Image (tube, rainbow, N blue to C red; front, side):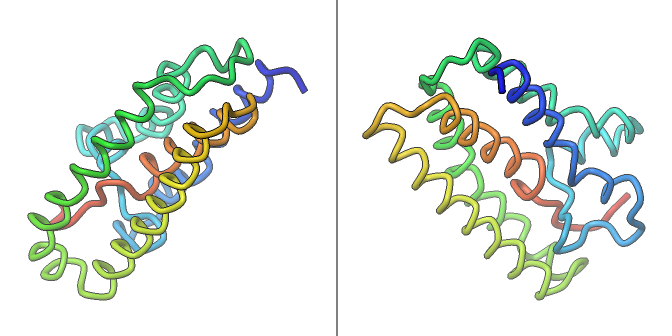
Length: 161
């Protein structure tokens, strides 16, 4: 399959978890903790536009994937570093509110899932820094990074408006 087609399919695949946003009443949940990248547009009344945000960010972040380039840009590693570091104060500052409004099961589950995503992302990033990745490996690394950002990163902790 051509790189343009694979990249397009990967980007469209980022919209898969978003029906939970549109059709689930009990939000946030362990299955879909309403990540900030989707929560902000949704809370601003752009619920249907929020579905496309992760896909658009993925396409804009590394358009070289459409051309089949395998090199992982330094900004992708920087995004992973920044998101990892910012996750710590996110959970620390929101933990109390998450316990109060979503409960302990939610907090601990979402934290554990985030740690799992990050462990996988860091393993993939380390491998791509050691060995020049193939186009498919680079596409998969970027897809996983944006899937985490659009599904579990920076989950909603606290009272819903």
